[in-house]
Image (cartoon, rainbow, N blue to C red; front, side):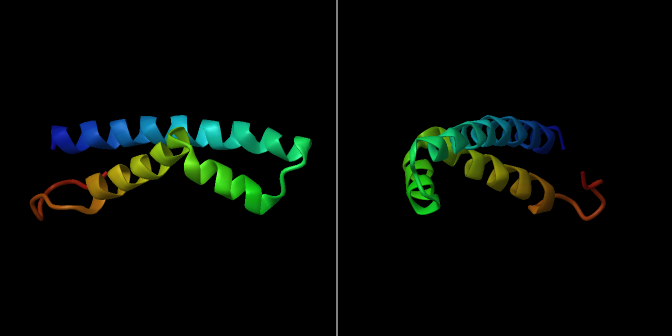
Length: 73
């Protein structure tokens, strides 16, 4: 149970960090990037990909495994 809470909080922290970078890269629109260029840029950046890793960790910690009597978050 505590392992799942740990991975939930770790995934939450990673997703917050990743989405902060994604939002901060919105400034690329002001220097002439279009939406496709923006998407290609953030896909290449590791700090933006950890948002996806964080979301996967959150999803797995909520829905994966455990006893049928465990309390879900």
